[in-house]
Image (tube, rainbow, N blue to C red; front, side, top):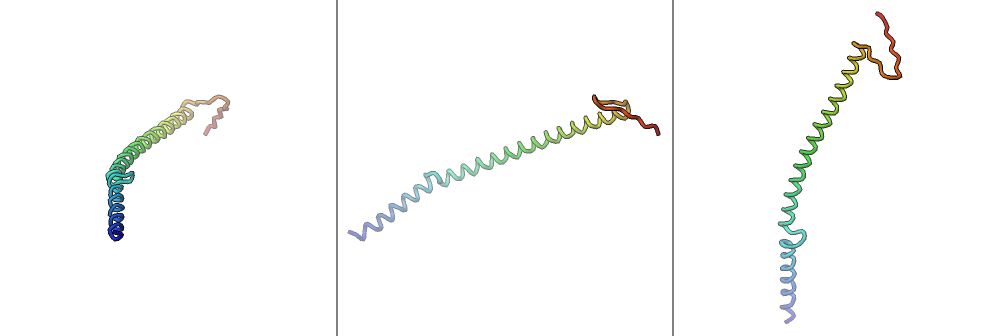
Length: 91
């Protein structure tokens, strides 16, 4: 009688562990599903990063463009900002 209890307990534990492997919180299908979701999120993050990089480049271009316009206006048109004193040196 006692010799049958130990294998029965071991088989029961094996069945419980196997059930956890396939149907529990960290089951194989759940892990596979989460891995797929993670890949999709990484792709979305990469796309968002590219969009952010493009926008940052556009902002930088606009800033540099405005600086170039201001420099040209200063040199060719003698533009002066408020509280500045314009001094022209003849060559």
